Length: 176
Image 1 (tube, rainbow, N blue to C red):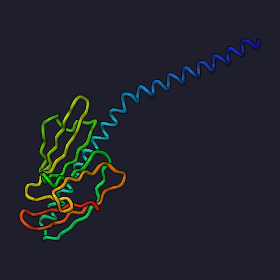
Image 2 (cartoon, one colour; image 1 turned 120 degrees about the horizontal axis):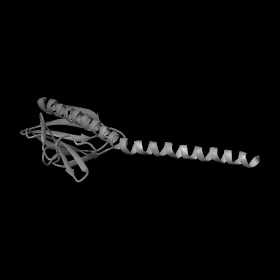
Image 3 (cartoon, helix red, strand yellow; image 1 turned 135 degrees about the vertical axis):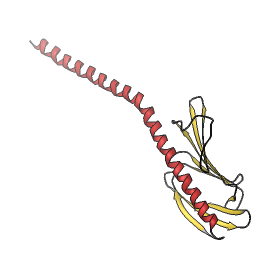
Image 4 (cartoon, rainbow, N blue to C red; image 1 turned 60 degrees about the horizontal axis):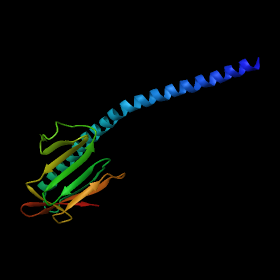
């Protein structure tokens, strides 16, 4: 009698373990296929937000540039992924992100107003670059023709943009 009871208890444990393994493997399979799509959607959102940030920075520069010399604006910009570059040498502001999402057809630049969007793909690596060229201004970083790269950070950066006057109009950018 005891022998039959022991085998029933063993059978229940074996069945429980098998069902648990099946459930865990099904969850793993779903995550394997769903996780890349989740990352792609997250990157799509980050790129869309970054486009809005670039437009906001552009509007602040235009506002400061239209004012009198000494005109200043301070704002915060958060970077969760990618890098934001203030290029005083080439008078550009560039946002670059390694992505799981192809924003546009690779190697073909899209212009949305003053913003140029370029997606590049090398193998499985996708990079989306947002660029605003300032031909009408002489961009400076801390008063010099320097390049400042802001990496992703948990806290937002405080950016100060000021009109330094003269021709061509000098726009100075500093990180506070």
